[in-house]
Image (tube, rainbow, N blue to C red; front, side, top):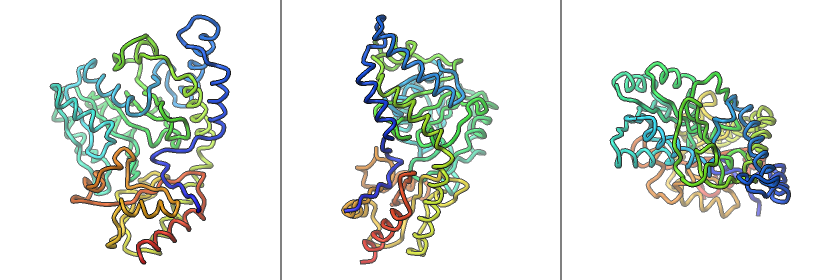
Length: 379
């Protein structure tokens, strides 16, 4: 049976070059980076070399990168640290953030004195900049704004530069979850004044179980995990040497191939959108995902008003044909009440199907997917 993977927003396959780096490091660089002998120094040198190369790509200082177990830990490190260590009393976020942010913020609101405000969304699910500015203007409390760059379900792109400028105007700190954009969009963090940024390696063809936070040097956050003094005292625990080296390789390859791969994926999304419109004239492309100026080239989210269009069953039926896609975040795959993102944008219980593409996909993958979708929904 043919296999077609259209769920790259959930996770990406590791590039062979990245796998090779990990295997070589497992064989040749097994020392504990905290050890002072040659084996330890070699491992430590690999970590710091990787950190430096990544910092150069992202236009930040090496010391501003903190390696974590993934995007979720990085989000928690930043948000909890901002409240506990920087005196934040108000968090402004949106109701369609990833749950690594939403659940963290809810926990803080229930267990501390921090307040939470949710910024309004436009009809396409984008951040309402005017409402964000209003919320900031009305507050005299130390504030953290936490808004993702690219939404993981509908793919709309928030303007980080504009949001950061609004935050600066009102002296608010700005954190952005960039899990869906790092490695796919060039982010010059010299030009965009973001205080905190978070990312996860397995979203850009790196290994699972590792991510990183960028914490600008003027902010001092205490660790969430206590123990040794690794990561300059900001994250205890022996570093994941193999994954650090593999993450740097994955990010470097992502930047090296970014323009070429983006053009290929744009063509895939354009082709898929046209094929779906021809097959299902009443299709709705959710949020801004159908607008190529406002959404990621990787993500297309849609709803078809047919009785058989129910996300969970449809995903299972497609899987029987070897096609992998999703209704949204893999972290919420067990939810039965539709997509919380679509529910928030449109109201009521909403179901959608999310396709997320990569350079490994082909036009024939799209043909196969649309043919099988027609077969399932029309039979």
